[in-house]
Length: 115
Image (cartoon, rainbow, N blue to C red; front, side, top):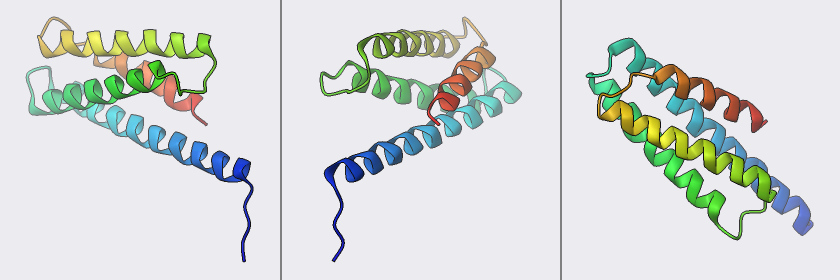
């Protein structure tokens, strides 16, 4: 019979969660690249903005949760980044900006930090 310590199981859970977050961010980067290539009024832009907004709203909600175990300063910094991404996505949706690259760059930095 297998026996795992709680710490081992918890660490596996954290690693799996980070991998899912990385995959979601990778997907958002792919969508944003397609949107950038197709233009601000394209279906790809609508899909990218919708996905990115939903993803970052979820991240911000998780970061704001008292159960989140990241250090307080890091959580605050990530929430600030998330708010910027959500606002910039909204500006793109309203055709006030076409800053797909800015969101892509930030997303890549965050993704790479999840290693």
